[in-house]
Amino acid sequence: MENEFLDKVENNAVVRIWSEKMQLEKGDSLTKGYTSELWDFICISVTQK
Figure 1 (cartoon, one colour):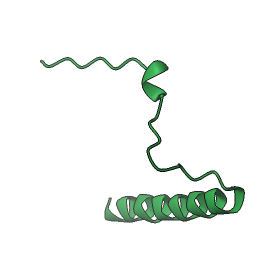
Figure 2 (cartoon, helix red, strand yellow):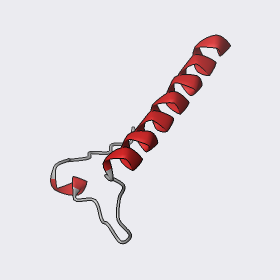
Figure 3 (tube, one colour):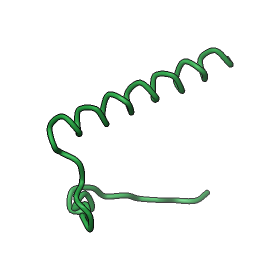
């Protein structure tokens, strides 16, 4: 089980590094003061039992 966790951590790090590299190459980095409009497209429902 520990190996699965470490594999996921390693994979996440690889994806993060790749994403940052792509943003720098394409100039797609978020600008200062940018506010995501994601809330326009999602609905979150939280229930407690």
